Image 1: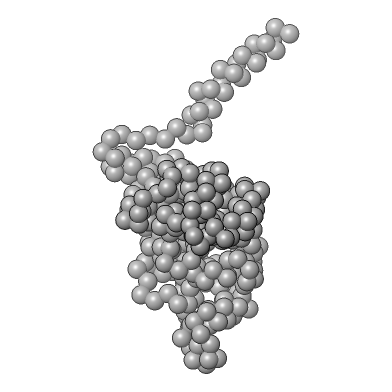
Image 2: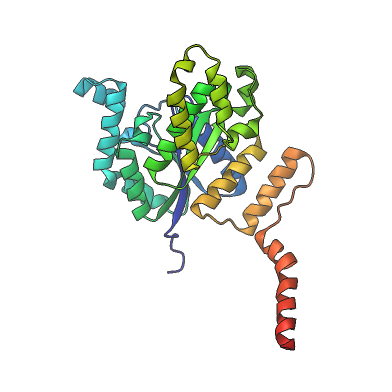
Length: 310
């Protein structure tokens, strides 16, 4: 029907441990997307999130409040947050009623930072699964603080958490190393950045851990963890500096590729104009169509000529 809102919606489920920069990411990404011309709706799914810096289209706090749950049920913050997510899971009709009028928008879901929700608790995964049935295509954007790269033991823990999250959430997945603009303040990296983003040969990390008087007693355990990570060969990272437009653009390309979002010519022109202003020079993207015309068209002509000769 003419003028009807598109049935398929796209978006990002922004997840990660507390303090990894999820809310700041939602603010920066929403501003970037609006500059491209996308209509953006930021949805706060974290009932503990107060003083939101972005314009919130839907706030789970309208349905259930963490403070109220803690007081009424005498729960701590962790138990209260789990209860809130289970309550949202049981009242998804409320969420759908809020999202349906926003069809045609690109969604950013600011999710709670409790690690259990993304590694083994079922509520958040069930919510994402239900959204998929509403024809909402999401990419999980998992943020990890880049300072973990400075400590081999912490980095192995981050790899295990990222792998468990990827397997549990069951969404197209993009892992980010956030706060890259601050990484120099955390200390010197043992290897170059590519080693951490591409998750190269982790045996070198084991050698670093072997020199530590504490971790040398757990070498066999660390070897098994590293072997598990390398056997799956799923985890990699994209570095993110939320203040850098080029960095955000690289992340957005990976996210759009993961969930199948295709932007039009107007958005590409907006992106080129923005990047040109940021870099102080002309900036152009080679579109898929242009590449096809340049390389595939001569090949097609050659094939046609050979066919005519036969």
